[in-house]
Image 1 (cartoon, rainbow, N blue to C red):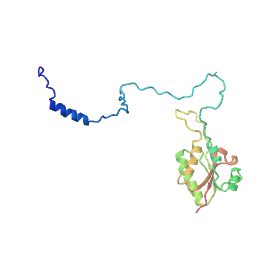
Image 2: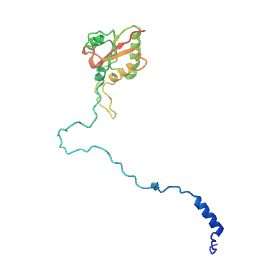
Image 3: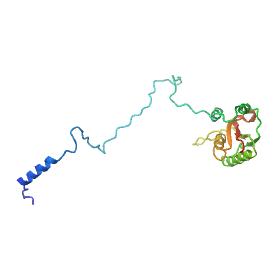
Length: 199
């Protein structure tokens, strides 16, 4: 087979081929440039970071202008104090001045979250059924832990959890407003909970 000559196209085959070639259309027009496929083994260019450049400074020198760091969100007490008032404004004004005496109170201070949650639900539901309007929930301010450990724990875990419990079902339908208590009723370690009228 190696010494065998390959035979060329006959005149008839060449004529047939030229007629077929005339009917063929190019896949890509000259207007569109065909780009080569990317090399899968080529190194990808490193992404450039868009960090703001820090200018020269000396240790202890005060920074100029505004800080590029985001501002911390306001504390829980501040958020509750500035939340829209949903109760009667006159009653609200007297309540935050400590001039209203709570109809009932519960002290959750020192309890675990697992113990405090069901007790709070039971207390608020009973107060609502009895037609009480203003109740005091004492959480305590929380204490600093001796050993914070690898995972930071917010000071006053119970104090931060209680407003969420009061706003969520089943208590959310009974609670009209939540405010930090006046100093004479516990200050930052307690909440006024104003309940809706029993239907």
